Length: 131
Length: 131
DNA sequence: ATTGTTGTACTATTGTGCTAGTACAAGAAA
DNA sequence: TTTCTTGTACTAGCACAATAGTACAACAAT
Image (cartoon, rainbow over the protein chains, first blue to last red):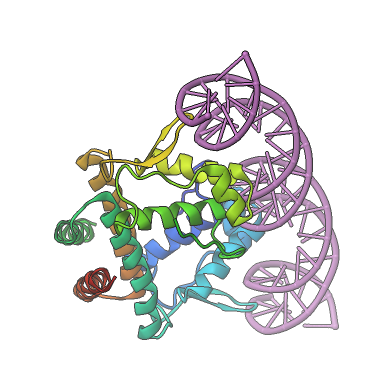
């Protein structure tokens, strides 16, 4: 499991770990059932305290990305997310509303925003294929 | 100018003020050229330190929502945002990418996300008309 | 000129988030 | 059983963001 953390990304270390693991899972480089690097091992490799990694893994568990088996390690969840679809939609709706509010404040029309979304969606698709 | 702040919104007071003023401007309840409640007056009404309100107004000025005339007060800017369109698009693109990443992590398909956006956009439109 | 109102600057305090140190509990491996 | 490895709990220190207190500067109103 290849991770890189930078001292002052602005983003706290534990979140850098969370994001990168999420990305590895989303992109399929970490597959369901696969074991993550143990907390202490990863901590030593990244030169951070093991509690910092533990916190990252705790967040990932809360997000449903991984499952922890008490004394046996941490594994990628079978399902991408255990949240009910209703819950996921609720969270995304909040994000969307915030985005719409910001766009409106900036004077960017709704239609333009949707076009931008289409573009970015297409860009992501391209990225995935290039991997 | 009607504002409400709650002690533990989780969000800091100065940001609550920023958001609410932005909303008032975006929704047209505060019009360009109109004077905002002076810092001390608003501070007294909200039972917070005037520096907290000052900070909020400073953020609003940086965002281009208001203009300050040193000793004469704070006024709603003529233009909604002074940022060049290119800049605005850049900021929105970041937000969009974050949203797309989250949706992908949650296993929500791009098309579903777009549909949700359409819904929320329509909902906002309705809200505005009902005001 | 005086007074009052505007926003500003600087400093101190407080609360909280991030990280780390140490000690622990539970199961796997030998 | 013993040892090693897993994640966990609790505490402390540090840094920084948020808020407040006090003093100031600039202009308007009188």
